[in-house]
Image (cartoon, rainbow, N blue to C red):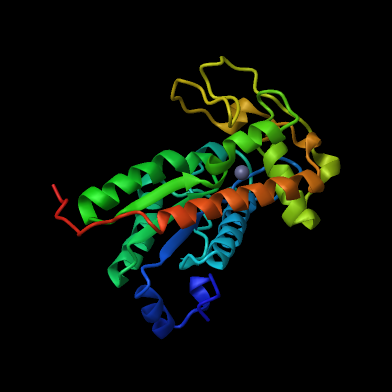
Length: 267
Ligand SMILES: [Zn+2]
């Protein structure tokens, strides 16, 4: 069963045996929130899980011991609550949920925990979690969003101008067309670029230099920020393949990080 990357499908003796090989544990983290008129609520959780599992299988094929937990399906999405169907945790609860999953894994002996995110709104909290996990619990974790490993590829791949890749956008729509085309209502897709100060982040590849909060209701009547009409399934498949390869390379690298002896880090 060691070839199966899904932790949920292992038995405890299999996990016990796997732990002797110092495996990487991946926690995909998603969100449950509106994605415009053309994409379903599940996008962020679905894509985080899909990219993580494919990347883990690839890394495992290349010799890395690795397992992936089920995706944390709801995240920190207060900015989407103006749209029906969205679900959010508050920030403390979200951090506690992801933190307790990581701490459970660490208690059994997992020493390499990668938290891989699929929703921009989670990112500050997950980065912060790598600090509290280490300084308060002595657990070394790494956190990133699945697209972070492919930003240069994404810049070359895109057809949209700045503003086209943000939410329910060229990227997410293409990735959904590649993986769950049955759930994409392309006839409902409409582009909506953000008309804001450049200090305010308006694109995944052009983050603003100023932190600020806003609701999606005030930013976009449709819930879209980006250019979903440029997306095709073919382009999505190409991007997905690149993202999976980049993430697999990170997993293989993370598996070699020296962790040293556990030291007392509690302040
Ligand atoms: Zn999304």
